[in-house]
Image 1 (cartoon, helix red, strand yellow):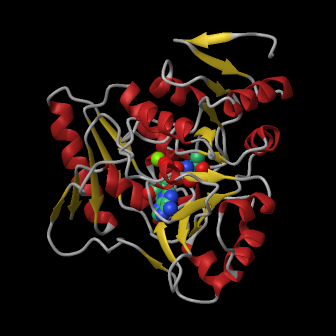
Image 2 (cartoon, rainbow, N blue to C red):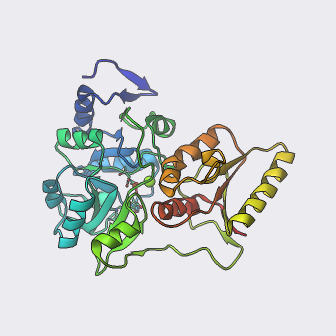
Image 3 (tube, rainbow, N blue to C red):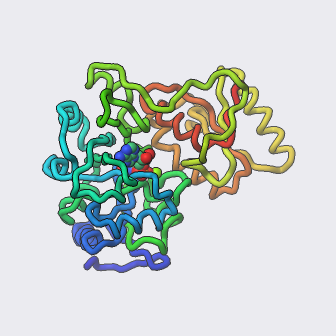
Length: 340
Ligand code: TXA
Ligand code: MG
């Protein structure tokens, strides 16, 4: 049992020392929910082999039951147990990118209940690159299913206090540790079909996957913003702050003019605007790289909500490297994409 016991609305706040991680592993083994850090975002973990525990994840998050979970492992032996077969390219990618932010979608074995994969015949699996996450999996001796540890629809948590804001009182424990280094979720790569397809861009870039696989890799559902000046909000909002977010796309000089116009209109009415751009996040001195933008994205969205802004304006960013993942999240968070 860990030495100090702190609870926040009933949720146990654990440290990342070995006693605490042992305690967290006990909770997982007995069918409970523990939020833990990974290098991407905080995950909400439960034993991947326990359908009852998996159902608790969906309840705690308010997650639609048709959205499958990623299973986290700490060894290739665990991979052999949870998937039916391991194609050569999966093994090659695992060796190159694990532990790391790449989830592979493969045929699911009978050891993983259908609830984990929302009834799909496949399972998404990854080995996280974080000491605490790996220790938790090893000590519990179980693969751990974990979506991001936020209420469904909100920005993903990159710190334990984001998890408490969303889920305290709804989960058994959260492990307090370093913030998440990458700050945006893993790339989900489907290897169950005839060609590899990125289902969700993330921490491993499309370019590095193409280099490793030596072929073009398509990104499902990602189209360039062109044509009509406005596109309505995506089918459903996701990664969204409470304040409405507008994404401004188009040439830089025009973007800046439009942003200035919106900001002055809002400010003249006494309303607060939050700006999310690779320039603003660097206090206007130079644009930061997509990788740094990704690391700050969710933290910045949550902070703007805490400050009570009435509108968030985000700027389009380059879609190379982690920029592709950033643009994917911004489009889903936006109520409107304004092409200028
Ligand atoms: O970095 C991450 O991926 C984080 C950390 C905690 O590992 N997890 C995460 O999980 O972002 P979640 O549940 O928020 O997102 C999982 C994504 C969803 O888009 C889901 O639809 C997709 O992975 N996914 C999971 N299993 C799948 C499957 N069998 N087939 C297709 N897509 C799947
Ligand atoms: Mg999520």
